[in-house]
Length: 185
Image (cartoon, rainbow, N blue to C red; front, top):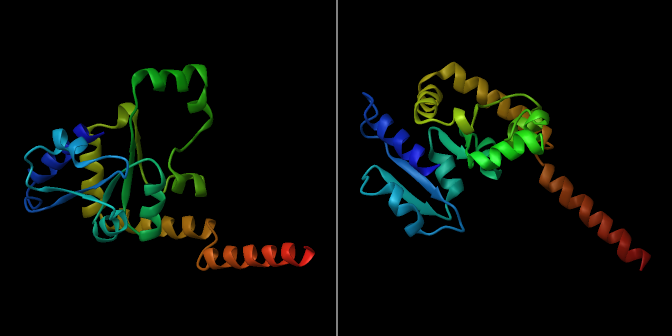
């Protein structure tokens, strides 16, 4: 995904009013700086950071996210996003034609799956282009109504996860269950 994402950074930087924008890549824990160097190259407007995904999301105006838990983290933090996913043509062909996975799955991101509707766009495989991602990021940043609708959908996603205090309630239930097990001996 990095070649497309770097083209998006270049396209956005060339837009009037976007010249001073900084792009931050939250490096994957299993990767190193050397893995990203061929893609980031000498770009002075792209920063690579590791171990600070929440900070990156918290302060970002918008996020381009590879499908996975980061898309749900963006929901929890409240960062407008576009979820992107691309794999080898062989993998996609197998998923579509042999496993028939694509016939049964409406969404690939956790947030959209939680509410069974699109809270944010998913640009998958052939839809994942620099042009499409650029247009979506511009919309996320510049279209206040679009952004507000997404953030309202985020509230529905958080509610589907148990709403405020869900973690505390789960922890309490676990402690009660453990207490019962210990009392039974």
